[in-house]
Amino acid sequence: MSCTESRGPRQIWRAWQWSMKGLRAAWRHEASFRLESCLAIVLLPVGLWLGNGAVEKALLCGSLLLVLSMELLNSALEAVIDKVSPEFHELAGRAKDMGSAAVLLLMFNVALSWGLILCERFL
Image 1 (spheres, rainbow, N blue to C red):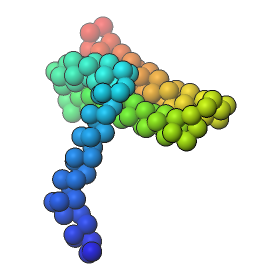
Image 2 (cartoon, helix red, strand yellow):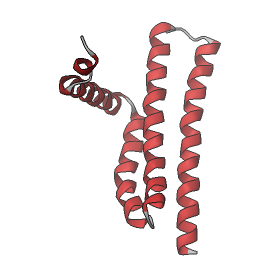
Image 3 (cartoon, one colour):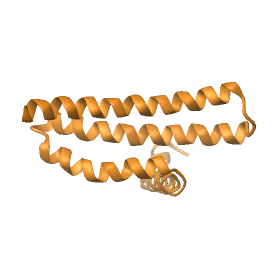
Image 4 (cartoon, rainbow, N blue to C red):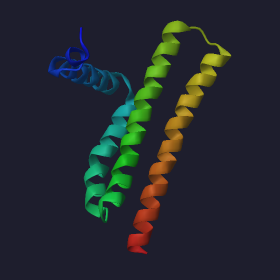
């Protein structure tokens, strides 16, 4: 198989299908992802409306997308850990806690980005 065949329309379509399968699985099995997705559905248009210029819009909306992306990675990490080590292990617990902490830090990033931009705008 040549390089052009491996990245043609068929492969792009398959990658799209796998990504949609992952999003559906996250929606179906992960309450945190559902909650964060609902918040993003509400806040993405608000960010596009409130952002003054492309950079502010990118910061407001991009910070939300980063949380969703990290939530997907955290859920994937937890699923692999549960598969490999169903019984409790200190390292498995630590890895899960670190994944959760990564999501939390990106939530702080959302609060900081939105807070700084909106405070400057309205105060």
